[in-house]
Structure formats: C-alpha cells, structure tokens
Image 1 (cartoon, rainbow, N blue to C red):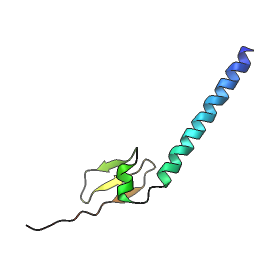
Image 2 (spheres, rainbow, N blue to C red):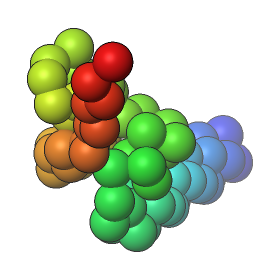
Image 3 (cartoon, rainbow, N blue to C red):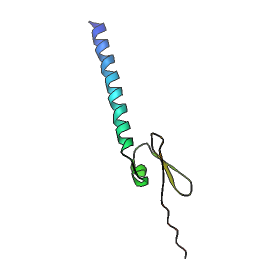
Image 4 (spheres, rainbow, N blue to C red):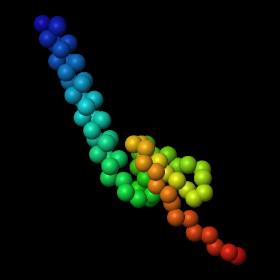
Length: 70
C-alpha cells in the first residue's frame, strides 16, 4: 500500500515538472520584440549600448535607442 502511494506521488511530481517546463518554453517562444523581452519573466537586460535583452531561453533582442542633440 505504501509503495503504491509513493509511486503515485512520484508520478504526480514528474508530471507536474514536465507540465511546468513546457509552460515556460511556450511563454518564451512568444517573445518577438525587445519590449516583450524586457517585460518577460526570466529575461535579463545587459548593460550595453545599444541595450540588449536576453530571454530565458537565450535569444537576444537589441533595443532601439534614440539620441537627441541639445
């Protein structure tokens, strides 16, 4: 009985981990612009010029900085 409960718990945990990993991948693949990258969870902004944003899955987007002369 205890082995069956443990087996079900392990299967449930593995299923949840697979579902959670696929959900994160789906969100990352929807990112297509620099602004979306900036707003996405897990993305990183690099301190470079021009600005760069790297998604959680490693894709890089470059921002469009506008300079004005005063």
